[in-house]
Image (tube, one colour):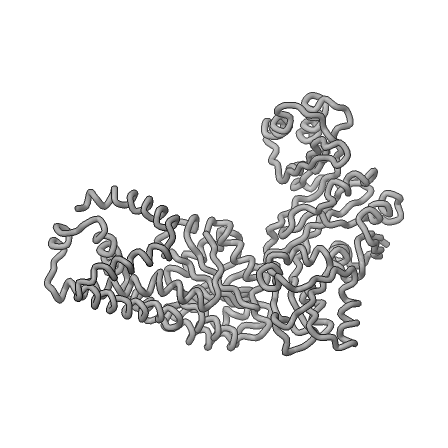
Length: 560
């Protein structure tokens, strides 16, 4: 029977990786990577499995030390393990404010550093090797105020209340599998090697890489580190191709003998089937809503290899039927019917799936989704600030509202947008609606009111063109944009509820104040208002926007 050495204790992420690699193997756990490698090199076990890379932390800090101890055997395979690290407490009525001690494994707390710094910066941390044992002790002692960061399955098994799900999004760990024999080529392989500490030479790294590029060999990964003892450079490279091929073997031989000019300078670690840290967990998406924006996203998801299904009022495939077969349901319908659609179809979504809302209003929409779906359904809102006429997402803004139930599937959709170049901003529901009051609701309302005012005063387009300044053209262009596209879209924007209403109400109040001062010819108070506004906006903001305005003025000047 296959025997595997890895880092313990039982239930650790490395232990899970070993189980995933061979679920019927005999697992032998050790307290350190050095002991795992020693067991493997001494042939006490058939395989060793160790972490080498984490998407949150980068490469394992002991990366090169592992290879120093690997005096025999080969790197033959990889295991990618997703870790849904969540925050839990024993008390069901607890919240973040009640935590005064945070417990977890060292690497887990490191992977969650961003969340801890943002939400629990002043909470003491306790690093433990056996989290489950501490959980049992806490549960039996009924100790309050102790929060645990651990895999969500472990928290659930011990009856802990989940406060926050997936506190370290996009968290995947790559484990290297070491065995005593080199595997045969599969036709889709990679080879890894590491150098000894190298003497300084001008252009050495460039010359090494050039040997691969000249042969058409693609570099998948490259890392370097100064050796602790000598402070000389060591290089790790992972490249496409099996070591047994003529192209790869000749490249390494030439690099060692002709480029580095140091026999024994390269240690080939192994060859294995290529892996992708961007492992896809979602197989299929289902859209409710067949408008242009749904089709826009559907086309791009299909190009990434996902199966996509469309359903709506005009399709033969009904949403009720589609929901049963997809991993992620996306609702993309007009704002005015979004909550109604969520309330109708949300209860039909099975547990361990996801609901993603492509919507322009957040607070009411997200609350409806959380209320009508099962607690095991992931929920996230995405507000893409571009229309279906956009060629790509590159450099376009996307506002993402994550919820405590945004998990693995939500993170994969977010990663999909990031890969395609979207600039992603994270908001709370209230903050999103407030800012969209500034970005959409208010300017739309101003544009419609301006057009009404022109009509009431019988001012024609010719009159506007002949009397415009560069400054006055900005609102004119916005007005033209609103009135040259689908009026329903802008009517939906103006009809949104939530925090965005406050922006419009405050604007009307402030406009009234300004007009009262203007009618009274209060030049001084009006000047003070403008100066106070400028201070709030900041010099850096004003300088940057003025540079943009000058560039736009070059174009607008030709229109006057």
